[in-house]
Image (cartoon, rainbow, N blue to C red; front, side):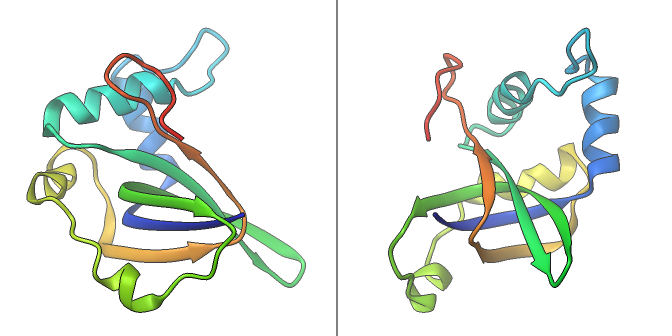
Length: 126
């Protein structure tokens, strides 16, 4: 499956610290992404997806985490112009005030990853 994601990269350390500080870890120390995403959406009044993408280079795999305003998951070819044309809601840029992100808004395509997305009732979107 191909994943197209438009959003900001966040380091695993920053994400884990945020989850710890805001009581968003389970009793076993696992992240409560549903609670995290519902919290972000209520703060920003816009949709947020958490996407873990695997960057595979030769014999190593690096996991990159993004907080995204737009995600597509399918097996079709993607036109770069369409990806560049995706409009990001102004409210989404507030994410940088809530959690420290790395760099500028990114538009990435990956062949392997996991998408977490929940509506305000905690139901899966993807």
